[in-house]
Image (cartoon, rainbow, N blue to C red; front, side, top):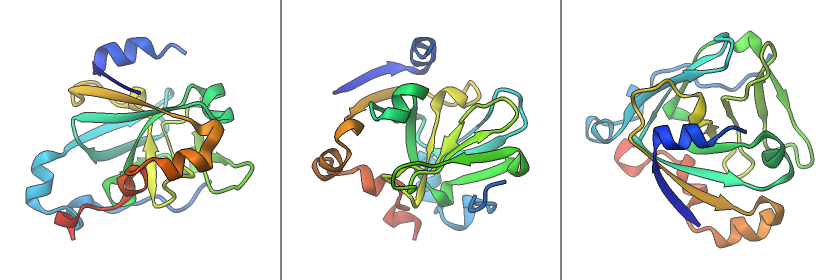
Length: 173
């Protein structure tokens, strides 16, 4: 199921010491052509200790997952390649929770508890970014797709594009 809405409507409707973060600029990876279609979003946790920037479309494709942890956290996220993400500050303020397969790295601020990004099981070569943790002004629209995390293996096999969302595009190579 896909739902398209403007970012303010999406945001209003959402009431409810780690290593491996890219610390380089995505300029090395994105061509000028590709960069024209992307915008630089910035965001972070509630207390401000963790800050990041991410290059992505202004029109976000957000997943709403119903697996056990996403349900508890109301985790909505969009996926980007690691090369499009830069942790600006707060590496020492992050901690990580894992369970089950330990492939997903549920990273959150150890001060305020907010998960503004994480490494999803579906895309261990990318990041899942919480759109509600982005600073205002760069998101034009949000398309929400329901993902059946309760049936993770079947859902991953049926979904034709989710694994590619964390891969750099061919234009960027």
